[in-house]
Length: 261
Length: 288
Ligand SMILES: Nc1ncnc2c1ncn2[C@@H]1O[C@H](COP(=O)(O)OP(=O)(O)OP(=O)(O)O)[C@@H](O)[C@H]1O
Ligand SMILES: [Mg+2]
Image 1 (cartoon, each protein chain N blue to C red):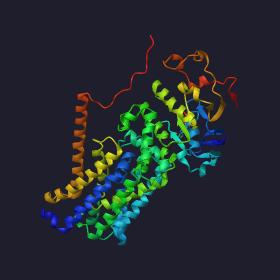
Image 2 (tube, rainbow over the protein chains, first blue to last red):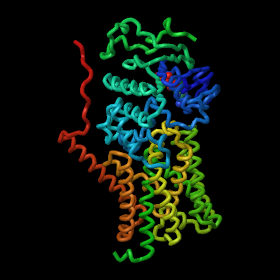
Image 3 (cartoon, protein in one colour):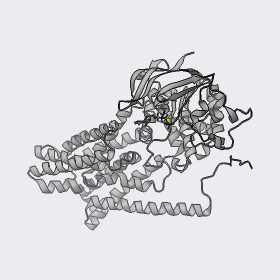
Image 4 (cartoon, helix red, strand yellow):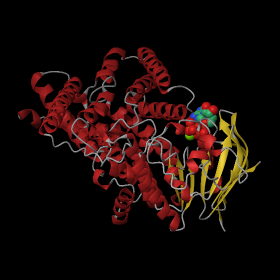
């Protein structure tokens, strides 16, 4: 299996303050890996360091077998940030934002061609937002904006999807639709690395879970079956209930199946 | 319009039209980034450049271009580091630039008239040579802003995403900084340094009251810019007012018009009940 992401003894942080310490992680082609952990544990920092957005202090990162510094095939990676940046001062349509996802493939100098427009429509179909293609992004709900960002990542037809809490603020039906889109992506041989708070409808898809705690990888292994109430065979997260209001990491307390480091 | 038969009026009009087109083409990216006031900061720095030119007897436009490029790239580097807040960096620029400019211009021989020219514009003194410079630089600015629109849009919309897309983020940022400096210096002839930023920002603000996308906003902003600049020259000649201030006031009038028009259209649409926002089918079923 060829390596897609390989992180070795990584230390990284902001302004010299170390957030991640001695993190090692390997993702091979076709893997679906979930990164879990409490707020502030360093999940976003981990994937942002992998993508080169946070400076590495020590250790090595390889993307598709190339050291990250020399990596140039960015069209192979689709990134969904945790939230949209500072927010735009000028209106932009959903289609225009999603079209940004084609730039890695097309380059700076070429104008959008038929294939680019088709890919944008296809990606918007996958997240169920095709009918909003000409609407200003600002008029969409938070969950719909999140789906716009997912479509932007899908539009580039990447080999690796890196998603930071793509389900935050997305309702159950959209999560199902999104799980369908990811399942198709993985079925076509795509690799997925995603930060999650709750597995929800994505659970069957996740091959491996990595729990980040205080900047280190605390546990790694196959996702354990949900404990207690959640373990009922036909339990589905269709209705909210009080038990879920607890730190997500509780659901991921180590069990026999998760190997502790 | 017999005024248009006069050569200096023709030159003034052409120069104004070029700047009216170029300033919003660049300004839209600054507004998108919420850096609407950066043009003003660079304008103040350009004044220092003018002072250097007057003092050393070289072309003030040339020295203004050079000094404001240095200033703009400097601001970009500060912004990139994220050390100083954008707001504070701008304040430092404003005061340093204007103080340096006033000081240097004061040291030169023909001080007060030239200071006024650069602060408030002197469109009617545009020479044929000036026109070539304005035309060349203006065309370069417009071309760069249109050709790189997808990349610049992605950059100003979400810089981190642009980085992960492998875009040359640093180069594009410098391109924007240099273009800002060029636009400021060519526009200082028409509206003056104190009002340069208005030509970059007001047409964009006016356009976005009635548009839904980036592309349509850019097109309309450029049209508004050209319209306001052209009308500004003609009206100011008839009414004997300052062309720069007239142009900016016309652009602001268009803004008021589109703002009122846009909100009226939206209100009518809502009242007719054909709001384009359709909600998705309910997916939450409450269990009793
Ligand atoms: N841009 C930044 N500059 C400085 N410190 C930061 C920055 N971003 C995050 N941090 C710090 O890094 C630590 C880890 O943050 P990170 O965003 O990686 O957490 P997370 O696990 O993604 O949390 P969440 O679940 O809330 O998204 C936190 O202590 C945070 O304060
Ligand atoms: Mg996070």
